[in-house]
Image (cartoon, rainbow, N blue to C red; front, side, top):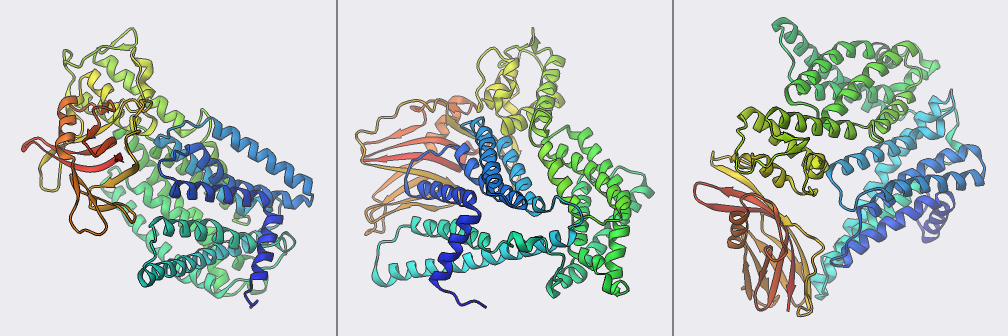
Length: 589
């Protein structure tokens, strides 16, 4: 073991800078964004910037590993610059405010880029052993980097806490967040990059099948896989005997089983390639698994297909269901490939999965675009069936002049809710003359006359309540702050929490109120009551979530509180309201 020294670490950082300069650039950029977010109150960093630096880390790493196979510096620089331009172009078209669909897409692309790191250095044939060895070493080094960074974070945090408790040093909570950024976004990635297998060693045709990996594959994963398969086959038998449709949840179980089986095959793959021990029992087990598992899983994939079709028929199309349908098709294809190829080149499992995931996540053919078109089309068909469309536009039914049956009302409500949460209510703009903003979900429901069913539920005690949302309608309104000296951003859930603390002020949130303390006193100097104001908002708008800045403001002599978002539960029977979540700006004189 090499002795740790500052000189060694400097050499490692220099090595990372020389081998992965673009990846290091993105790491430093993302770290800077986090430090800026933590230490500068009220700063608004656009989502595109987070996406650019986050995806840039794995993109540049993958491109660098691919370019190293050409052994030319100009290729390495050129491919990285080209990939950065493509990423930049993608980020420029991202909206300023993310809906759920953008989060899904970015996560999907991130998964593809992470998986590509394992396969891009091995695009040539006959390199399964180097691929397996590189994948194992990379995963192990990543785990080690995470463990080391966790230990470093705990040690530095304890040191800071000691300064606070022993020497009464004023330590702000954000110091611990800064330490987390240093440990997890700088130390861990740099350590990981410094220990990625060098290009000269990456393609050596030999492997080290560690005892830990052998035990993990043969004696942990394989028995769990066998038990899981048995349970699903028993359920399949029950379905056939009773001749009934499977539970929709079976799709998840079969997917986990199939993916778990492929992972186990990847872990045990070297046993099949070890020609010196072809008759060894462990080699036989690995051979039988790779040969028969793709065959065994096919009847269960048919069961999975039935479950998916049932869910689509009963509840319609969503992003998750369409992804599961595509996954089902990919599982059929990869099983067929493994059977025909005798499972000799397992890296194609990762390559094909990444390709399918990428193609299904970008472009007009993506699951997001298909689902959006399907939802909007269904919304129009439901309105047309209820005679609420005239020349393709919605007729104002806010006074319920047109009766809508309960089944259609429920389906319309579910369609509007899902589409608004995923794409924003503006996706229905084509059916409205008035402008529909992204957060105009309640306006859409109110116009078609089914706003009264929104959010009606039972809690654990059986009491009926309606979900209540409120947000500022116009974010471009100017707010006068010349009279105020202090600005605090408040973001809380329903539980009590300390929002802000320094040597002069402590701000605490308790259910339905905000308390201001002097650190030297135990009792609150001032209390801001929230319940009456929020109930007033609910009563005045009757479920519409859009309000002006003035309506969302509580202003007294020494403070001004402006809600940007609030949600809660309104209980009809006893006319009470429970606040669940609040985003607000607090200005103090």
